[in-house]
Image (cartoon, rainbow, N blue to C red; front, side, top):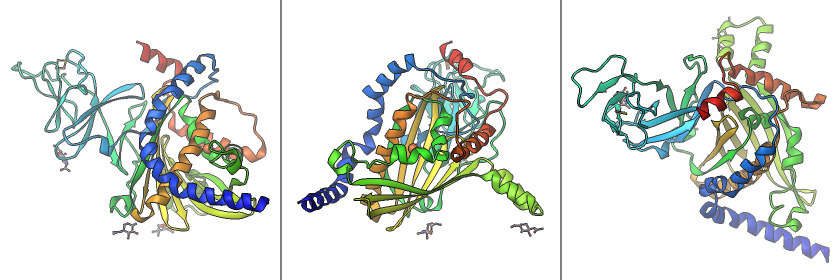
Length: 413
Ligand SMILES: *[C@@H]1O[C@H](CO)[C@@H](O)[C@H](O)[C@H]1NC(C)=O
Ligand SMILES: *[C@@H]1O[C@H](CO)[C@@H](O)[C@H](O)[C@H]1NC(C)=O
Ligand SMILES: *[C@@H]1O[C@H](CO)[C@@H](O)[C@H](O)[C@H]1NC(C)=O
Ligand code: FES
Ligand SMILES: [Fe+2]
């Protein structure tokens, strides 16, 4: 008798797997941000009043941070983005170049991103029509004045576009970028296409999000139970996820192994340039009835700087990838987005994996939203890559990186 039940269950599961992506694409994946802005986030804010924060690292690390996706900014458009304790006016000129200026006009403080107009390389303030150059922030034109004071200028921000994401360079000491996110070839030559996106707001410190990559023990505890748990307890009783081959390596450990072997200077140089990267590999299996492996997936993760991750997924049907961005909107409010690309023929399969990824990620969010930052964690030997991760991440902090209290104060003034 039990055999029939299993068979029925397996059918339901298959049906679900085939159907879910279609339902999902319409209802959820592309609109996931609403989920983030609604009740859940509000509840988290209320809860956070009782929450202990812990002794936090600086709240805005140095590096490239995503502000918008390329598709959200057409030619001649300007958008206001508040992040990293700054107000950015992000605009795209008619030839496609993206420029970022301080949003507040130095004349009388109008927000140039709200109603400002793109004029050539300049952004024109909506209040009195002053125009500021995107290249250097210098005021180029005042419609009613004969002479432009040379001090009339606004701050510009370095930006770059990679994998159809617009990044801004933030550095507490004002240093120039020494690395940059790169567009991967499959996206550049359009062999992989956009398959969907999601967006979450999370109440935690930015460092916690990527720390999960170095924390292999959470995988079976948080991500072990099958993704259908919420849908049906019955279904989840015979499927589970298994994770193996997990390993986290910062780029500079390559560097150390090189310098121990008769240093090759040019390789060492390269190693130094890639210090902002860290790597993780893991294999994911979906196991049915503790026996059958129905899906397996090798994931190669590259953490690129403090707020950007590329996840390359090798499946039995082909490769695809997810880009994850983490941007501090406020000291303890992170905006996380995932954008998925795959070959067009794998679209349904990609949507299914993306759905699974969304559900898995929500489990992490539930932890992050309520945890405190533990500066001196009580670890066992098997947790050692967490220490390595924290040492690696500390390269993104510098002398003037803002503390939680300094950042909160500047928001309130
Ligand atoms: C667009 O124009 C700016 C200056 O106005 C120039 O620096 C940039 O290289 C141009 N970009 C393209 C793609 O032509
Ligand atoms: C696109 O780039 C990938 C990766 O370099 C390459 O394997 C593929 O052949 C390219 N496709 C086309 C159509 O150029
Ligand atoms: C060091 O490595 C680079 C690139 O791999 C190579 O071109 C160069 O010849 C090597 N130099 C020595 C001294 O081995
Ligand atoms: S406030 Fe911007 S031009 Fe006057
Ligand atoms: Fe996780």
